[in-house]
Structures are given as C-alpha cells and as structure tokens.
Image (tube, rainbow, N blue to C red):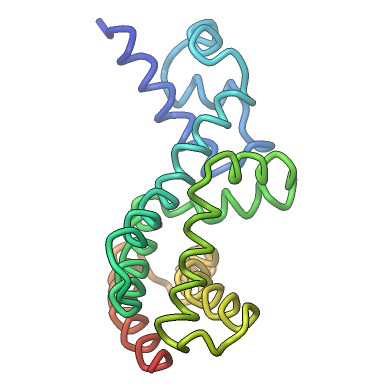
Amino acid sequence: MLHVNDTEKIIFDAAQKVFTIKGFSGATMDDISKEANVNKAALHYYYRSKEKLFELVFQKNYHVILDKSRNILETTDNIEEIIKKLNNMYFDTLSEHPYLANCILNEYTTNSDRVLGLITSNGSVNFSILRLLALVRVKIFKGKTDFEYSLNLMLNIISVNIFPFLIRPILINLFKMNDVRFNSIMNNRKIYLTDFLSKHLQ
C-alpha cells in the first residue's frame, strides 16, 4: 500500500512527464491520472487543479536550471570555466529532461504572461543574467564592450546548447537516429562547444 507522500510523488512525476510532452494546453487531468495510475479524486485531493500542478512542475524544472546556473556563477569568476560548466549543465539537464526546452518554449508562445510570471518569481534569473553579463564585460573585454554585445554573446551560449534539443524529433527522424545515437552526438557536441566558445572568447 502506498503512503500518502508516495502517492503525491507518483502524481507529480506523472504530471511532469505529461506536461513536458504535451504542454499545459494539451495535457488533461485524465492524462495525468492515467499516467500515475490513480483516480481523479486522489489527483484533485493533492493538487486541486491542473493550473496549480503545472505551476509546481514548471517551477521545479525551470529552477533546476536557474539554481545550477547561479551556483556556477557564484563559485568562480573564470569565464572559460563558467562556459564549460554552463555547457555541461545545459546538456546534462536537457538530456535528463529532453522535452523541457520544448515545454518552456511552447508555454511561452501560448501564454507568455503566465510563464514570465513563473520565471521571474525567483530572483535567481535576474542575478544569473546580470552577473554573467558583468563577467563577460569585465573579465574578457576589460569593460570596453557595451551591454548589447555582452547580451548577444550570452544568448549565443544559451542558444547553441538548447537548439539541438528543441529540434530533437526532426534530427532523429531526418538522420534515422535512435536515442542512444542522438545522445552520443550531443555528448561530443558538448566538448566541441566548449572549445569553440573558448576560442571565440580569446
């Protein structure tokens, strides 16, 4: 027999899977109850509504990235080390949650106000972005570059990591890859990106 906290975790894990694949709009409480193998009464008892459950799932997954980013930025000022760690962190997180990037993008395009509110509810996002921009300007360019250049560099670092996971289904079908092959290529790409970005920062 499941304990109360076991049932709650099973529902949460099921919701995480359903939301990351179908998004908020496409997912239903029926989908989640079937995935969790619990009745809808139990589902509503623990989480009350799809909106509340989505909020909890989104915050947990998104803030995993934010918290890891903040930890990296707080522990070193070495920009090359930061880039290497950020590359590895993005890869590892997105490999563990392969549909997370699509989920965030889908939710932002369908309900930007809700997602923006969830993203900015934690001060980590502001800290991480501003600190990385400051490090880029001071450590690499000795304060001589402007905000826009620093922002573009930061966006490039994020984009080159996330984009392959956004188009993962296309890559897998186009090149007839399985998950093992895709992960192997992405693992090699993680190493390639570290070298590539480091050269462009010199």
